[in-house]
Image (cartoon, rainbow, N blue to C red; front, side, top):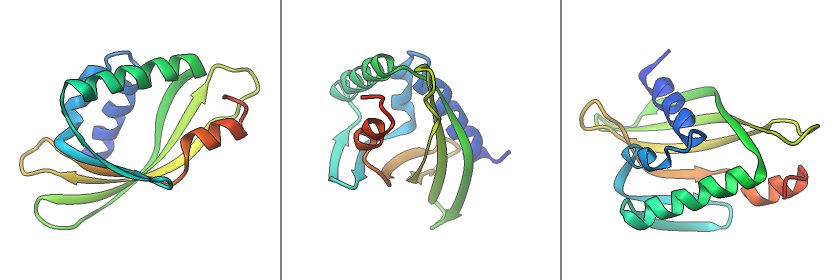
Length: 136
């Protein structure tokens, strides 16, 4: 297992553990969230922690039970930056619901041993996919 795979495995464990405040360590002081509906710059501050709490509550309401890394491929862009494509599998408690498999790209900054997410790009609209699967 590569260091980047382990990084995202740790991210997955924290994302469903309720320790969402610990996820801030995975992000740069400011970062870009992008997807099919646009993009936005965020600061890794108290408001971000509050937003992560809202995301956690949303995940609880929708029955998210586990996030699993299925595959990670990465390419060094420079000495300090790596682009990683992560294929995720999200499982839900709702009976009869198949896992949702989706891809995301992450630009990681790693001037030291600890990588930080500078940008992530979601390939699909999460809420639309969840509606299609009957989770919303």
